[in-house]
Structure formats: structure tokens, C-alpha cells
Image (cartoon, rainbow, N blue to C red; front, side, top):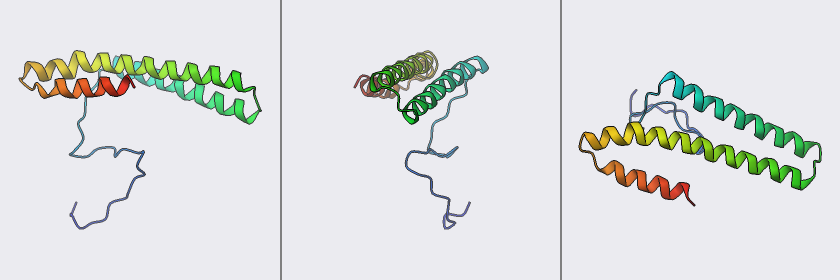
Length: 113
């Protein structure tokens, strides 16, 4: 692509599908399936909360469901982080890239906010 060509701009909350500046990770079929299943369940929970709101459900009932969504997201993060440490971090440390440790510390700090 020519540098002068206009590219379609994405909203701030949408990442490009692929670009040279982004790191990527190939996942096993099992890891991919597990993470996608978790996200699909979370997506279903969010749709359920939306329906509850549309049906004027009681606030506490909605809050309980939102809490369950937060818990599911935390579980997703734990699984993804564990996979990241066992693969990406280990591979980088073994190849002498200790900067990955700083990246890991930074992401753990963000997750613990």
C-alpha cells in the first residue's frame, strides 16, 4: 500500500485486524477454543443484562449479573495471562529478551487496579 493512500479509519476502541506494529501470537486450537467459549458465554451474559434492563428488572438483580460478568472476565484474564506466561514470556526470557518481564509487570499492575 502506498503511504499516500487513505486507509479506512477505525474507531478508537477497535484494533486493526493486522498490522506490522502489532505483536501476534499463534494459539493452539484448544487454547483458542477455550478462550472463545469463555468470550461467547460473557457475550451471552451481557445480552442477558441488556434484556433485564429492557424489561425493567430490579436493580439488585442486574447488579448481581454484572458482578457475574466481571468474575467471568477476570477468569478469562487469568487463563489468558497464564497462557501468556507459559508461552510468550518463557520463550522471550529463554531467547534473552528480559524486557518481556517489564511488560509482564506492567500488565499485572493494570489488571490489579
